[in-house]
Image 1 (cartoon, rainbow over the protein chains, first blue to last red):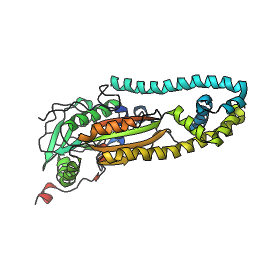
Image 2 (cartoon, rainbow over the protein chains, first blue to last red; image 1 turned 135 degrees about the vertical axis):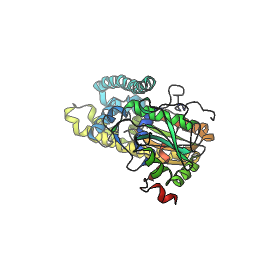
Image 3 (cartoon, rainbow over the protein chains, first blue to last red; image 1 turned 30 degrees about the horizontal axis):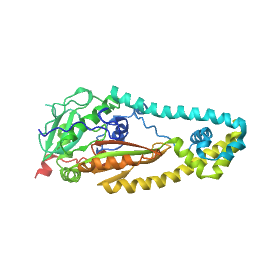
Image 4 (cartoon, one colour; image 1 turned 180 degrees about the vertical axis):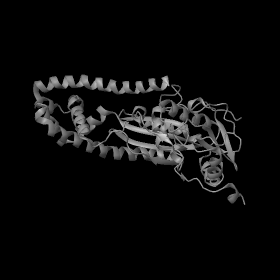
Amino acid sequence: MAMAAPPAAAMGGRRGGGPSGLADVLDVLLDKGLVIDAFVRVSLIGIELITIDARVVVASVDTYLRFAEAVNRLDLTAVGDHATIQDIGREGAEQKTKGAIEGAKEALHVGGKDREKEKAEARS
Amino acid sequence: MTEGRPLYVYGITRGELEDAGGMTGLDGRPIRSVGEHGVAAFVSDAPPGVVETTRDRLLTHARVLEALAADRTILPMRFGVVAPSEQVLRDSVLAPRRKVFAALLERLDGTAGVDVRILYEESAVLREIVRGSPSIRRLQVSIQNRSAGATYYDRIRLGEAVAEEMRALAARDAKAAAARLEPLAVDVRHRPSSHERMVWNAAFLLERSELERFERAATRLADGGRLHVRMTGPMPPYSFVDVEVRPVRRRRRSWAS
């Protein structure tokens, strides 16, 4: 038998963390790959639980509201528009501070999701 | 003896009696090869009835193919392909379609698949959008001094404007990414966006010798912190076997004569 190469590792920082970026591969397995007509016999029940990249409908009101909220949480000093901040006044400044903290939480949450994914992969 | 039983098919390669290295497949069933006219399918007995899609089975399918692809060229099947019997697999698929398989295998020799998903880092891209659009900033300021209930429609307008700007930015960034990565690839398939902040979702077919260079180039796209670049691979070339194979309903004798 030919020399077996080491199991493929996911690129981009997950090397060694598991057999592959399986969360991303699962999506591909259900959608790509060679198909022989009339030979596919598979039930797709429970797929929502399996695919991790949720198919987000891009143009939805929910998305718009979420973007608006995220924009309003931005730390405006980082935008470099001090005049706008002065216009907003004191109340706005308080909101701004809160926004920065929430922004940080959100960033952590995003990282956390990735970690969850990796944990899920490590478990399996 | 096993000819009447349905077989779960993992992939197709060259050869007749290929060594599956003692691997087990779905539900722990042993994997073997079924060879015919120089092409062989890796199979195991299929789970009974309709194959329910479970995480375990998907992972097994992925791992089996990853292992098989490590030391040979293979055409990976989509999850859930079940041949009614070994006889049908031999006579209706492997033998009559051997030229299609051989051509695909030749095209894929020495290559590997890598999927790339590029997403915006949310706060970075939103800052960029707000900074670049006075009208968005005006809308944002007008919203901030009013109650949530009073601004519902304005917030939808704001979010819609942001989404529109993001799409325009993403089109430019995807083009830039393509210009950097596509010259390194044998082939590419663009896939639909699966996330609201997704810039680009593409499957690449790469020469194995180019893998490292490609990884470095893709990683560099994330420099500056605007973009997240997620790479998956090297993996079997799932996205590059997009050929519809129809079983041929003929008896062995008719094509052999």
